[in-house]
Length: 76
Image (cartoon, rainbow, N blue to C red):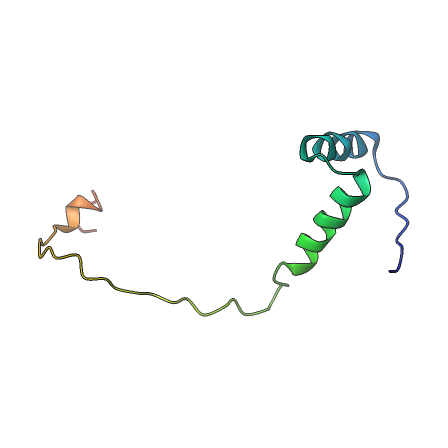
């Protein structure tokens, strides 16, 4: 696996990473690798998000609701 060397990491940043690693019971290397993996898996700018899937369910109730129950804005 390739290695990455990062220079000029602020002392406060390294201390925070060490605290996170200790809380999670893992090494600093593991904590940083997990953070980099999460960052790499985030959508990039301009990429399209996954389509939203909506589902409806039958609840057995047929109660209607009034818009003001959700929005207290006088229908503006």
